[in-house]
Image (cartoon, rainbow, N blue to C red; front, top):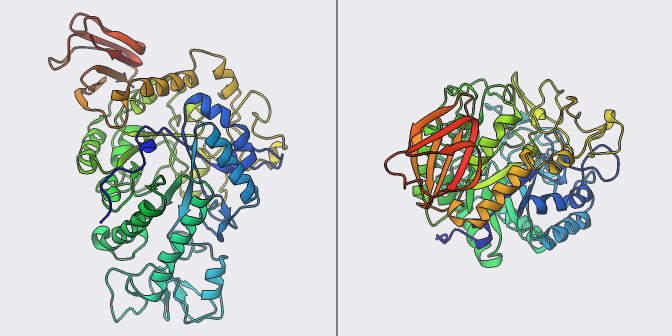
Length: 531
């Protein structure tokens, strides 16, 4: 049985920060970010108050899917530096009180991985899923082995064989979860995790964690697999964390993960709770998504209820066992600043994210209001559909004014992706010098969260008004109001709220408490300690 403890204590109060290594900081002038560049910028993260980094995949890869096509799990990609450079980054981060998580691509490899090259030439090898006849979704063998293999996502990503929950004699590729190939792959996962944890890595975010066992109703066999790995982690590396890309926190925590992200997909509503907050249909948009206006939109026509209800259900099911992670964005999803949403509107979004009872995850550049950049070319598999180009959320970090924005000294045409060409693009140096900037606000909000634990991931919350503004009470003492709409609103304080007499302003812009009333200007926020 998996322990019901929520995992290492450090994760409870963590503030995560996701780095896309290709575009964070380039130390050697080749136009691509690297480990040394991240190391050089750790002081920014320590100043901001970040204590956990998650790096997108940095293993050896042909980069047909931006590193999610791994060709060697035990080596780093040369574009980023060697293993020694990664260890130096981890050590430098630790010296600043920052832990580093790696991205573990558990369900598939590159078709250039030695495992697959061997399997494509050996009919007795079952590390991958092979059929001796054409079958739906399968791809013809590239080697001497006759047959077809099952990919995950792109054809260049053959699915590792973790077995099928339901076998069928008519489909012999459906091996059971305890067949030789699945057993070998489970053992390999343990070895990979142990290798990096012994080098100082603090844990993993697991790519598409729910997808390993095929045809698995209720993800029952997949949950058993991760429960087994979590039990080993608890024995051998009890301070390590295991976070899922599952999109269904209750299911992921029940499967043994320490936590899971609300995502733009996953769960019973296919990601609607997160999308109902941020997605304004102007960035990465899947053609099958169906939703009304999002809550953080100037028109004020959305609702926080989809998210609040989903959060409450997940929180009830995971209480005492795991964590719910709320990201601003990610490498596959639009940034906060997308389409018509301006930087002026982002303060309310951060005031919400950094005071709601979840573990917050800041996507690099969101802290200064970097925008989703439309119209970019397909780069290392970034395009997933006619309106779904992930490159727009992966552009170079903007550190300072000037031609290279402090990202790289390379000529602009050698950058992994182009910089935002807007002459008014935000940057860290300018905002750090401005006490009224978004960056300074994010820093203050993180510090406020740390100074007042009731504002953290596991304090109580009572929703007092679930429209515009969203008003909630944390720990029975801290009143939070956010108005993402452009129109000012005035409403009576709900009877359930303590009297605002003597309320102390902890952080506010445009929100005021009067005699039994709360007034919120457009794009406003307020955090008050009640008397």
